[in-house]
Amino acid sequence: MNTTNNDETTVLISSTGIPSAVSDKRSPNQRRLAVYIILASTIFERLAFYSLAINLVVTLKSTEPNWDPSNSATASFIFFGTSYISTLIFAAVSDAKLRRSKTILIGFILYIIGYVFINFIANAATHETICTGTSPTHSSIFTEHCGPQIIGTLVFTAIGVGAVQANMAVFGAEQIQASKVTSRYFYKYFIAVNIGAVIATLSIPLVQNDSDNMTKANSYFYGYLIALFTLIISAGLFLSGFQYYIHVPPFDSVILKCIPITINAYQTWFKYRVNKNDNNNQRRDGYRGIWNNRNSISQEDSSFPAEQALSFLDYAKAANNGKYPDRIVNDVKALRTALIVYILLIPYWIIYFQIQITFPLQGQQMYIPILHDNDKIPISWMSLGDSVTIIIGISMLAIFVYKCLNAPKRRVSIRVKLITGMILASLAMCIAGTIEIFRQQSCVLGKSDSSLSIYVQLPQNICMGLAEIFATVASLEYAYLAAPRSAQSLLMSLQFCLLGFSSFLAKAYFSIYSTTTSKFDFSCLDLNKWTYTLYFFVLAGLQIPFIIIIFICDKKFKILKLNPQHTETQQFQTS
Image: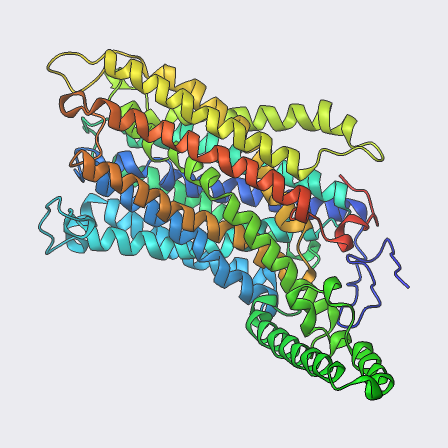
């Protein structure tokens, strides 16, 4: 019999193999404090992350490093891709071996070490020592100035980012288990992520002065030094909350069981087919043995349920003569379904990366107003349209819309949120392509920049922010609420892993256009009008068939179905 209790963090389920509940003796105030400490730590960690990520392309392309624009974008793709793909490894470790809190601390250590090396490279006093022996050319990222050192440091830092990112969202959600409250937690988590992004976008570019005319020595170093301190604050905050956290012990990792269960399912299925064929052959032996054959068939049929009721992996269940308990097989099936969902989201993630990659490159060749003392406004400020829209939009939806719709028997489904976000992402690319047409028409003869103001990029960034409010938050909800206990971090990091894979696909798509134009540069002096315009419109068109596919698959196969263990858990309602 299933039971729940206000002092338990998971539901007691009688099925074989389900983990026992973890006692939670915290007061409601301690639960809230645990959540808000995690959210505060997330703000400072994301501040450090975006201090590096959001300005990376422009930083490497500027006068001091003077990287080729295509190689600068490649370095950014590598950083994003590695940070997301490495989450898969750390998710398996935290689910099966280490507690999530320990894995996060390991991630913080790697993260901080990586940032220390970034500061050594950025500091004029130590730069030449680290970057000796490099002969800058533009043929590849490793032949750029300090290329191997920069790429190696970015990859190492990204691995630390992956360890933190794989577990932070899930660890926070574990502190509150009721499904509706968990959904509200993801709204708060995503707001925290974007508060960190807004602070980083507003402050770090001013310190680093990301215009091409660098006049302040060590400006990049001071910016990254500030980011290092915020990262240390984030780790300190996370440590300070240890006494208030619920630490769910590692149970197992479903990823280790995928291959054995698939093999066992095939073996059982094959035996069943052989048995069925033997019985069919016996029917042909003649009328005299009919009654004996019926007895034989009924005995065999009793060992296997009706074939039509089974999926392939169901043959691995002990109830169907397989080796594994139902719970373990169902966990693997949930992982398979999640993989399908995330594959269908790849075009959305490719569009998502344009905020950090092509939008700044496009903006760099537009008219950039002066902020003060002949310093232009930071190009990365345009991405504030995305982050600020997310913060305001989620707050408005949570207060006025979702609160009303989340009454009993009324909910905004994950399918509706995902499809709405994907449509908005496609619209954002259409806006970017349209703006690119007007930008090209406003090119000044003999100059690399267009006379079109960079402020016209705000609509495409705002539209992407609206897309993230629906699709990205819904994907976080799905990753947690569809996950079995043995795959909570795994499903969350599987999403990040596919996001990282999408980063490399985005780089491949980016490279097609780099080859077409010799280099990917929006400069008016080297303009290929339709190439850059088509870049955005093709992305918009690619999203449409995947919207249709995900709608049909969910209607027919219920691929967005949530785990009953989460949807039925309503043990406490803390906000």
